[in-house]
Amino acid sequence: MLLLLFFFGINAVLAVVAQAPCIELNDGNKIPVLALGTGRGTAKETETLEDVRNAVLWAIEAGYRHIDTAAVYDDEEQVGQGIADAIAKGIVTREQIFVTTKLWNDKHARDQVVPALRESLKRLGLDYVDLYLIHFPVSTKSDGSPDNIDYLDTWKGMEEARQLGLTRSIGVSNFNLSQIDRLVANCQVRPAVNEFEVNPTLTQEPLVSHCHSLGIAVMSYSPFGFLVSRKRDDAPPPKYDDPTLGAMAAKYGKTPGQIVLRYLIERGLIPIPKSTNKKRLAENINIFDFQLTEDEVATISRFNKNTRVISIDAWKDYPNYPF
Ligand SMILES: NC(=O)c1ccc[n+]([C@@H]2O[C@H](COP(=O)([O-])OP(=O)(O)OC[C@H]3O[C@@H](n4cnc5c(N)ncnc54)[C@H](OP(=O)(O)O)[C@@H]3O)[C@@H](O)[C@H]2O)c1
Ligand SMILES: *[C@@H]1O[C@H](CO)[C@@H](O)[C@H](O)[C@H]1NC(C)=O
Image 1 (spheres, protein in one colour):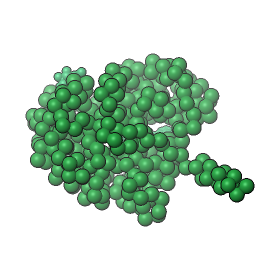
Image 2 (cartoon, helix red, strand yellow):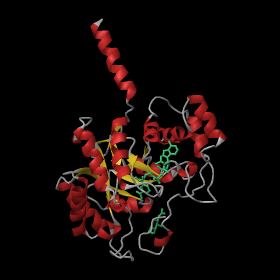
Image 3 (cartoon, rainbow, N blue to C red):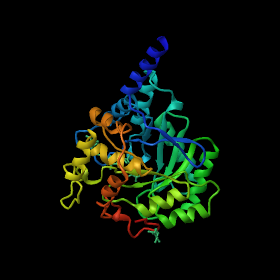
Image 4 (cartoon, rainbow, N blue to C red):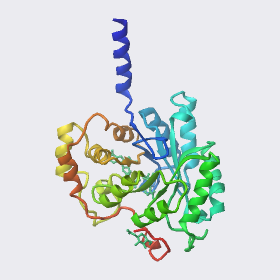
């Protein structure tokens, strides 16, 4: 009887807080399959950096164990404060949180990588991150003009950062298929992750399956695609009120946003939804109690238009432009 009570007691606690399962990376480290995005590209004008700190704390309270930031987001300090708040409240230990940050384009010289990561760690208030990514294959000078540093050299700096224990895993972001192949053919440590845009209008099947076949996990950014406002008149479907997504949402008692995040989970991806809203960020992790069918996944994939939310057209003439 006591045992039974104990059992139901534990279950009741588990039911309150949603948790994302972990998968194993190719270096043996474990990564939670959902991350909180803290990039500020979609932030409303009224949003402040203090909102990032609160969002990180609320996210950890809601069960998130993975936070995605970057040097260029200018919010590593607030991300670190939110994590420190959660640790101070006794919700988690540092070891239970997975922190991803990224090297910016103007620090691609091999000997700039470790110092850049040390700067990120100082801002985060941490002595290691779990995952460090090359943000883009493109390199620039500090004024933003094109540089021509080979990302294979940058990667050597990433391997050194890992060797020093400043990051547990290393990976890349926005690398295309040929760049992944060239890196894999010329590295000591294979990238654990490639982070790039995947959503219903940019399904990226070839790049996803290629990365997966090489043992490289895929983190999918801008997971909501054009469901959320991107301030564009020519935004392709699906929008938030799309009837196909609406029918699936009604069937499972979920929202269209949750359907799209679950779609990415079914495809073996690690979505990175951004929210600074307490209710929506809790909603976004509440996707681990239902499954979509193969047909439903295929139906959502048919929205594909190869249309990007994130464009880096300004760099299209720079060496190593990936898109
Ligand atoms: N590696 C890269 O180059 C790269 C590029 C872009 C993005 N990223 C990463 O990916 C993350 C996410 O991408 P993103 O910021 O472009 O877009 P996103 O997560 O697809 O969308 C964020 C927008 O959706 C809203 N939202 C969040 N949850 C919602 C819900 N349940 N229902 C309705 N609206 C919702 C947010 O508003 P509220 O905050 O008001 O909820 C915000 O306006 C970034 O934060 C960043 O960490 C990486
Ligand atoms: C990847 O980017 C490189 C550098 O711009 C380009 O030469 C190559 O064709 C691209 N590959 C794919 C598969 O898009």
